[in-house]
Length: 437
Image (cartoon, rainbow, N blue to C red; front, top):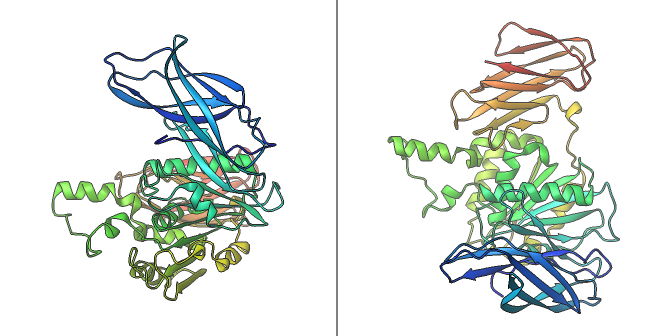
């Protein structure tokens, strides 16, 4: 059935109340209400209440099914009956995929963003679930399903690999709603797999390579290291025929458009990469995303980045094999990178164009800008030995500083932009302070 979303059945694991979604088409002039979906697999029936479907419209609705009778790998028929007030309106059959424990699989969840049913896919850790291991977060390319993304990787023996989906296989280039979907799945994966919070890594291919650049710059304190593969840094340069963005800043309309794209202008956020390891992988014969994009980012990072690796795969096209993503040196590099604890991270250099998208970096949070949607930058140094925080701010109206790790009831000296120091005495071990310009 077209536009069908479903999880895999994994025999032996929880399969009694799995959620799937189908599209209901209402060709009548009245709203369809009091709808239910009756699902049946192997004699196990489940009846689910559905959302209403407006007149002359379609709506993708989700329902539950019971897959506990399935014990083998393959596809199983699930009979569906659409009911209204107990009367059958339509019938259909969908196929649910099942796999064996330890194999790659998909799982569904109800999105907190809009209440729709979405899915993510997993390449589970070799040897079964172990808390405190690594989490590899891989964002897919345009036209690629999350399940096919994880199938390109061999399962790892030191962590789980999770791939979100970007609102149908293309989505939003991991920006806008794609960014929200990605971060929601990241939070789900943290709760599900309970990884070591210092061992979380980001990678992706093509559009997912752009997603890696974008999410890496937007949330630099969430990753120990990132690895963009065959990625373009910004959508506006990749979308132009010659890679050159026209200068439209001379008009008010042009300025508005440019400011709206500031939050995803990765080169302007490049300093944010300093705190994460970076591995750039690109085929040198790539005609879909030219190698010039990788070289552009290498040239941008080399002058200041202390921890960057770069490799051009000889003769590599846009996709030359599973090594286009599952490249051993990337995972070798991941192994020796960790996210520092907030209490151990003493130097912040963080830029954002919108606190509504990205506001925090470890112990500092920008709550308000002087000029909205223009770049804000904070450069801060913290010393617990001397009980001080100092630094400079650009385009920051309201700033929050977490004082966790400082000694309780001890005065802290805070000096910003060369102004006279503010003295503040902490009230608790996890105190914080808000500073207004």
